[in-house]
Length: 356
Image (cartoon, rainbow, N blue to C red; front, side, top):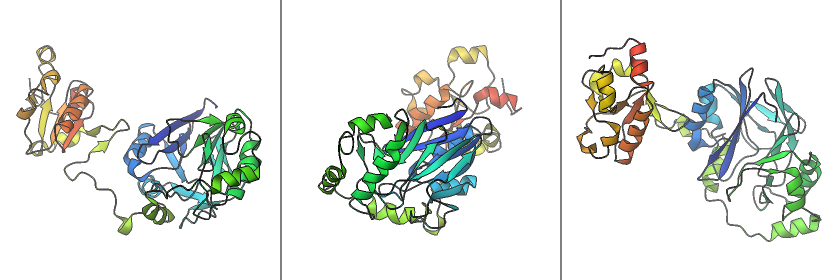
């Protein structure tokens, strides 16, 4: 993998789905593969924190086990939604066929048509053939099922054997799912060790295996497929509900944060909790007027002293330990809570009011 490529592998625990963010380090242009609706805040925060320009959300196929986050990311970043011309996904910004390329900065992904799990399955191989994103076509020691969504074991056999297995043996396989804690494989490994299609398995062996699996249908099938045909666009364009008590941003690490400027201009609407230690406040007596002081190491024992009639904004010197205070409050039942980004250092740097 070239050093100029930014690469992030992300995971949704509920659906066991991998999403992949790839970006060119110089131009900051990026693409996202197989996003998940419920992970929108996480994915959007990562794009923003890395200061990337998201060009496109790519779909390896129309998923049946989760709803894609593609439409939400298009709504928030103005990126394009791209998938196979045979995916069945409506209103694509670009339809793909075999050999097409998606360029981002100095890099490109080439489309390999890999039908069999569905008619519209495609894989994406990076330009130097060091990585391939196989969707549900080829999994780690497995492959996608072929018993619904116009699946075909015969088609999938040839997609894997003729197309994916023609890639270099050291090409890293990144699938759309794994249910056993595995993150990646290689083409060479799967050619030798995949129990369904590796080694000397022929088409009859593979088809016989696939036709006798008798798997239950995915739990989200009736929800996911209709939603994914619309690229995850909610009914009546209803976006996920955002906090109505302030412009809270969820960071990539999952922390709810709010800007000090906004807090300073709405002081009467919030309760500010300063979690610096006594030693710190003696060394630096500057504080925000009206802030309640409970040192972080005492917070769990004194949690009932924190009022619940207003949203709580936590703060410390740098905004790091006050993140822990947010977690402590959440665990204790506080819903409206956020960390003041940058702590007192940023608060003072931005000339906001303090007292000694």
